[in-house]
Image (cartoon, rainbow, N blue to C red; front, side):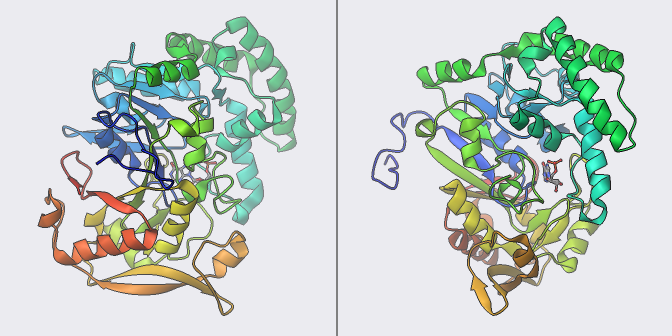
Length: 439
Ligand code: IMP
């Protein structure tokens, strides 16, 4: 039966193809999206990154090899897929060249499969320096950024002082723009007491990177629309998570892009009416890296997961903060993203627990919230109202079908999906492609 949307219209006019899907993180990032995207890519034709930069780190395990991707869509690890870095991404060209070299060394084919938007913005060394200086100045109020220059790069984009990929790949034009920008940015860096940058050095490094990237640079908007005309299936891989969204997250403890589903459209040039469904990814518990409120944070679960060697950041190696599943947050995420289907990852992380808690509401000053309050001063004081579930105390990492999961694990999964308000379709019990249960 073809699915219909909330107004009764057919969701996909091409049921013989996989739908065009936006995949989003429904928590604070690191939900295990890289693996899920890699699994879903099997059926997609084109995989698109539409926001963020190399602050993201998607870990994918294929045939015993671990790949950590920062900018290149995870789909690159499958043959015959088109992978696109869209206009909404901010690109550190030097970092991207290193990433591509790593993939080439593994024998991954890029030519004809990998494309970079000419209108994506470039992250420059002064963005990274400023990111660091601003964090230092904030002291204990710091955001806990990845120091990859993401905020200052998006800042330049909004201030209309950014440099784009189409400028980078034209050496003379790039030199003129860089000279102007470095002159201004060096004054700012000097005011911070930081080391000014050498124009000659940055120019040489970036022109070299630009020359390496040039063959992949194109108009990805028309490329994606040509793919749509061919009825290709598009998969948009979100980076970070809903509560790191610049508009809908726990501002100012957020990243600088729209990590929610709307960002996939503006960050790629594919309009909303070409999207068939939104898939949300959550961990079976909650994690966060960096500062900012995390209502269900809990030392017991953090010790357990870190003791298992889990929950260290893929980009910075920082230990992630951990907590119980927060259904208030995931319900809110389902609302702002329009999540149709839910994927739960890392179920096996909870295998040893006697009792598992889930936040079903927050309370502060006698007021009960069933959504995430916008004011982080309020959110920071929210006390979760927990519901408890019995643990299954059985290893799940080898389970490959729904019926093979312990009954208590199934009840837990059904409950968190119901509380979130989305249909559970995939459960992941480990990093490997084969450790995936489809419902
Ligand atoms: P920025 O994106 O480096 O500016 O960092 C802003 C906030 O987003 C910090 O709390 C980071 O830890 C967090 N963040 C950025 N990228 C990721 C990610 O890929 N996963 C999880 N957290 C992230």
